[in-house]
Figure (cartoon, rainbow, N blue to C red):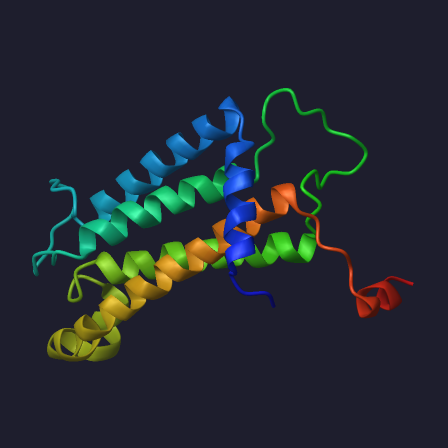
Length: 181
């Protein structure tokens, strides 16, 4: 598993610069849609559908916004830009199916962690059932900032991997070549 290096970030920026209008539109719509969904359900956007017993803390808003932006951008990496013709190879960015599944899982896990991180600790039915009201406040609430960090790390890593793969196709290792035979 490769980590994020300076080279990876440079390649991700190149991948982002190669985006076309279609990818920018998809990123915008998904980010706004995900942000609205997460904001309404966690009552970061006040609404009459859901209630929140404990008010949000200051870091909920940046985590909510960044996770929404990164999730929108990640979704857009799965979309071809206009003017790019599909050839016989469906993987236009050179990524393997395993890498696509991995980044997809990281993105979904980041979104779920963000939901747990920015939500009301006692409004979360899973935490409430597992820990009770006082347990949710005592045990779950202090863990939420770490869940937020995890959400941001997972979505960022998935996004960088996907963007990097749009401009750089890593060569298969000798082991991967032997397994393909």
